[in-house]
Length: 167
Image (cartoon, rainbow, N blue to C red; front, side, top):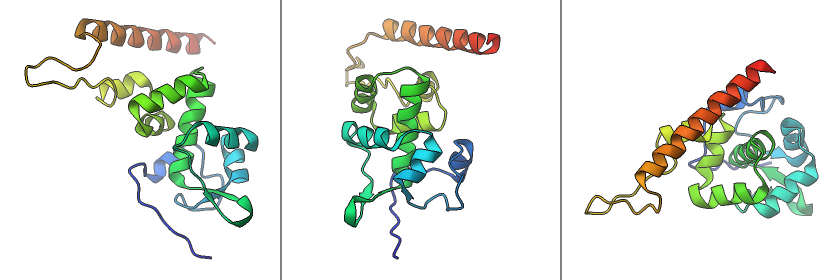
């Protein structure tokens, strides 16, 4: 059996696999996984993974003869990000699709690595304001509104941490 490796911008370190609990098998971190392995590792039924494939075009497992799916490491990172947005953050599928359209797959990868939206925004990965020659942003949001939104996000995260500690 010939193994083909793909180089993509979504590759990450082995620590990702250890942090997210995906090293449950004896496979290397860059090995392809079957749908049953991914299902067990993510604790999500196989039919849900197939459904997500139909809703998120970025997830493209390699299919062999007979339709058997093999998920690449970058597919798994995207699936982890989708799961965290849907199950942990309470997003609906349309909300995650909108985030993916707006910010691209790096958002899901960042989320799969445990970063919150506010952390990614602080790192400049989200809500980038593109400037024109006259210094005015092309972004439809005004700068004061953006600052207010960032403050609200920070405050909500602090409240969530307090609630987590209380429970």
